Length: 212
Image (cartoon, rainbow, N blue to C red; front, side, top):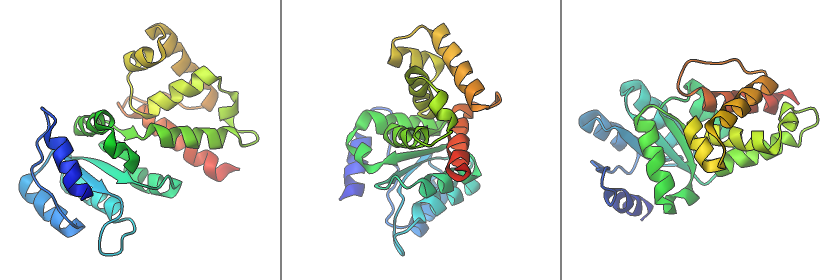
């Protein structure tokens, strides 16, 4: 029922065409090899074991079809799932909570983002992780102001500087300064790849998870 609901939701979008549906990883790989889709949308749990088949499938798809983006849906906020998905890089991956299934705008944005090689991490999950980390004694996140934390959260969602400015109602120049301050306070060096924002957030959260 969920698969059919997603198919209908996406088919209603003017710039998205659903080319196939699969019930398990093997069928998904067979379809992908034949149809070569721009994006794969998968649940994190599928037959036969209903554990992390979706993550394994995501990595297999990206290895076989590097240009195919992957959106993984999960009802879990477990950090280990997130680290596992992004363990081989962030480009072309999105991790969304299943509650987002009913949010067509958020889902469609994620589909377009990974199709273009970008990355998306569910904002609700990012917020929970940031809050959890900020409460840890000695966490560098505690040095960030509320405005800087908001910028960090939006960076993790894949927003550009202009997008962050629009969301926060700030001037683009102000956003750029806050981003520079965030990287400085977190001790993160500048990167050239388009996914450096998501990469930076994930790397920092992972390091702080094991460092205290």
